[in-house]
Length: 112
Image 1 (cartoon, one colour):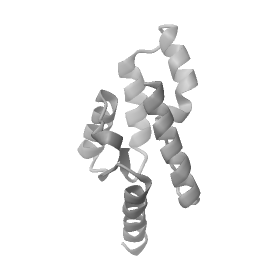
Image 2 (cartoon, one colour):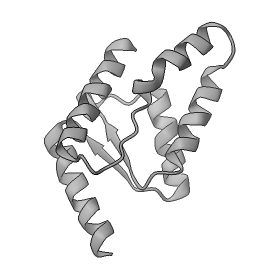
Image 3 (cartoon, rainbow, N blue to C red):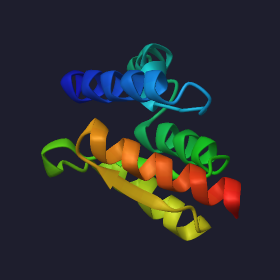
């Protein structure tokens, strides 16, 4: 879990450099509070994913970083939530794929 989180954080860090005007949200960047609350029994996995989905509901797209074709149960729930709301879902396995998706989506959003 920690290795996956670090891969996602690094991936988003690179996207933030390439797209400084885009507001990215990476759940793994906020894990200290979540993991501490989970370890203390203050929240459970379902509640954590509910919050992730609530945050996702405010976004324009979901970019899934699926390195090695890996999709966790939490990622799958977020994907299904985005699809239910009509939020476009895109998959990327590397920064080049992600940049192409983002460039196309930013252009589409600006042009209409």
